[in-house]
Length: 113
Image (cartoon, rainbow, N blue to C red; front, side, top):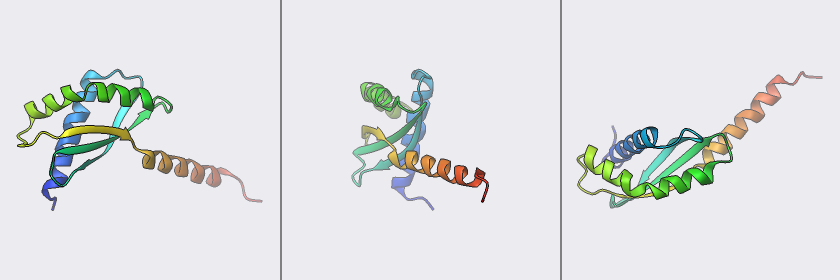
């Protein structure tokens, strides 16, 4: 069972992802990886990754610039009583996971002596 915070996070993640898909340039491709909601539902942290690597700063700047429009889209497409403030950041945990996966794959491909 999901609690209300999880449902709000899922709803916001879906709406932000739709907004990004329809409005953002595909270079870099922006992926929403995690959304956390504050206990009072007034603030949401949205973590993203980009493909290709190295363009994260451009993506975060674009997201912050369009945050107000995203809030309006959330207001229009949901029935949330409180429309949260949106904060954007990079999901460094996901980057670390990808790096660990690459290292594991490299060790699997090396022939043993």
